Length: 204
Image (cartoon, rainbow, N blue to C red; front, side, top):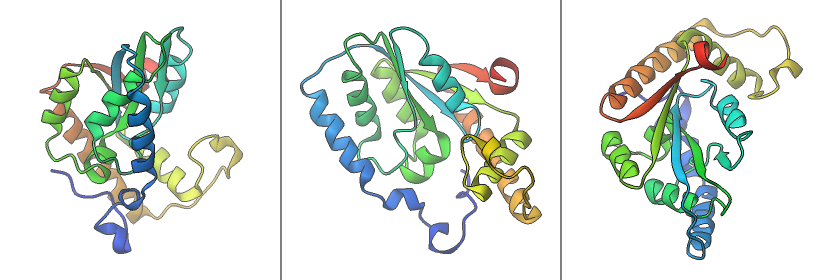
């Protein structure tokens, strides 16, 4: 499939977010809340690589009345990713007609360790979930990602330094990985009914 995200040391073999327990605790809280609620919005996921415009799309969607879209809630390890998404929709709020959450492809692969992504999306489809596949031109997406990783500023970059030095070798490794990840997403989406959205032509 696709090799792991370029990392060094022990994290080369296991993603650091897979070692956190905060996601499991959040999963338990959502599960308990879903037992007392049965909201029935139209659920959807935004499937994309990081720095592809997911935060912008989430912010735009949250301006629509009776629509709620959360951010990256599968950021850390979740024991039941599909079940967790089902529980999230059930507690989305009685006034919510549509509920969504963003799902980064590498988090699904490396943190949640979903090895059968097509079967995963089939299961979501059985729960009524719809899929938005958000893409962005890889060079700009990779530059944004490497800059954010280097500076530690993922949002509000205008507050950071205008000029930073990026190791060309790190940039190229990341560029190849991100290009491969987009190929992987596109291959999976061949078998998944979805709505394609392009950051460069539809959002930018």
